Image (cartoon, rainbow, N blue to C red; front, top):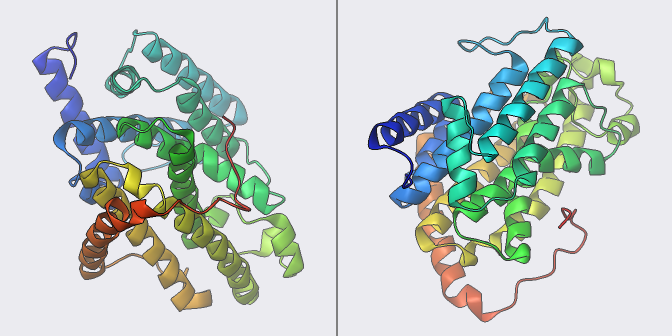
Length: 318
């Protein structure tokens, strides 16, 4: 992977990253196959570090989360992650996850603020941050997903801020979809990401989100959240033409699959949380085919016109 990494170390890191992805995200694993090999390796290594940090915060071992951790214990975990992250950036990684991060940030010259912003997002989960408005929910979505979109775009060679903003938009769209799909699962572990003011408008107390009588008004809030996600998906499309073609196909596939999750939540309405919403293999394959068409258009005719402005969308700090 680099001039200072032995072939045995390279293979160990690659195996570690592939295992993390196979256990954590089949959708990402599938989409990442479309990357060329070196880009796929970096994307998988970045994912492995993100997954490791998420598991550490949750105290997760063998798929089980530590639901009884005290705030002091969680604070210690965050502090350790920040220390290990800084050591990795300084070239002193002490485990496979942080060696993966060290390789990615050095290879692709990723500013250190971005890994630390992801940790800030994990902290928001850990302390039970209260999301009063849609702006709060979107800010959280930036920290846990939009910033990953930015780092992924950098792995693909992007440095233009306007294109990075589109990558950020895609990550935010992903996270808003995740929130919509997982409302009840999150509520059951004490996490509520829906904007409080929207819940208030529907007359749903935070503590009653999971009540049967709340299902219909909660769905109305989720429907509104998915409208917001659509705006970010639309914006993200206009960055696809600036990615290498194979990478564009991979990202377009993920965009279509996640959008389909949102559509299925809408179709199921207030029954959407009776079972987990998933996208079938035939629909994933169809999404991949359409994604190739999206990417082809973006790389040809799409380049003849200037992308529309991101009017009304939240914008990250530069």
